[in-house]
Image (cartoon, rainbow, N blue to C red; front, side, top):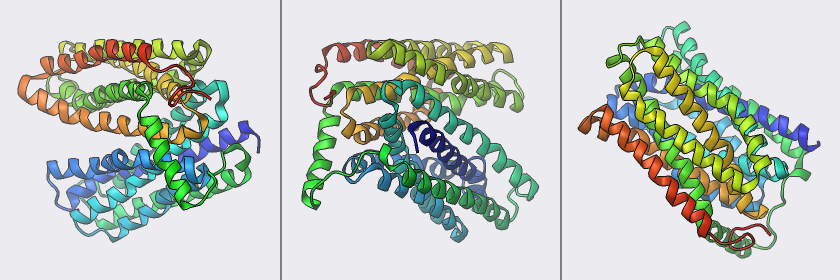
Length: 414
């Protein structure tokens, strides 16, 4: 299988995996938690616990792929997509649901950084474009999963709680699509093995040493950490916007819930369409160009984010969401590619693990920080403070990138 065919097949695997995961998550998961008697705080824990899995295990999973090989580690992640959904059939109380969600979180924790490393391995000089396309296909899968899950529950009569049978039917579909992702992934990695780096050589002790040294080498590179932090800070603002824009739009701006949903769609679709094109632009500009696009993206996110509490009406808010979505595309189309640029190919998995861990920390902290600030200060000051954090990260990022080690040192190119 040539590189182009393998990339298309990996995109198909990514679509199925993300569709399966999104179908299990929203709106099925919160409604299932409510059906089991969970209150608002408990619902939030059930939704967020899988992100905690990513925070703790993305880095080890990525580093492990550098040692035992991409194929084995990626297939392990796909096994979680395929097998974890069957555990939902055994859930009878809230505690069991939280435990299953934590285990299901291993799917993205293991698969996410490793598949990004696989794409980076085959991309060569086109890392920004190919990572952008791959990410966009994953977004499409995520976008498709949520409405399909909601429609299925509506058809099965579970919108207001319903029967456990309705939820188990949906999780059956989750399992089927997860199994399809595993089957296709097995075929792709079997036929395209020449495109993935081999496992590290040596016995268990040697591989354990390579695992630890890879983590030390990547995590000690201030430039890799700085790029990852910029992605994390941007995701902090995105998490806060996802959590509180709908509430602001309905309770303060007076929009209908459907219009609030459209605002989120404007943001996501803008990011989806812009990422591959901006990824190609970042490839053409090289490493220095990627840094500039990241800075421009963070600024483009900060301005509309701060403006949201001062806007009323659908179209002004939609305009702010459009600009924010474009800024998000600027950052995300360049950040993962820049991390790959900075690292030796044999450490792509570890680098993507560091990147994914900081990504998850940022995304998880956004709603929490936003909730504390909105509750204490109101929307205007809260959004201004988060926008200020975005802007303050820019000079720090530029200083680290200017003062970082030259290529060839630490995690630099060989």
